[in-house]
Length: 111
Image 1 (cartoon, rainbow, N blue to C red):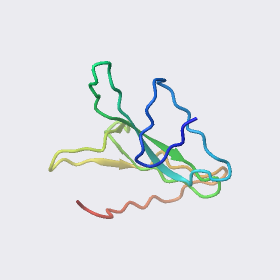
Image 2: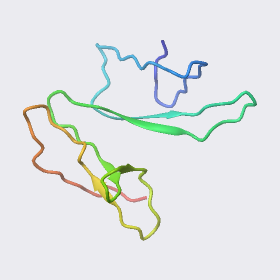
Image 3: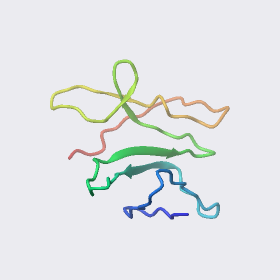
């Protein structure tokens, strides 16, 4: 079974890969960004496909920040200069029976 390390590709023939987590060293809560590039028999590489996996905390609330369209559907976080956009915390959760009471959005940095 492969061991995932940041920025170290795992190359295999099988299209499925299991991400096994060590119970003694679990992934800390947060967002983990994975990428897939496929290579054909001529050696051509695809553009990367990405997915964010969110590891949720079992005690504290977990914030999930997305960019959405007017219908609240999650979209790629990319806009043209001068274009407005919508940020969403709708997928944030708390451990039952807790409930999220406030959403604090902050522009942390630019560039």
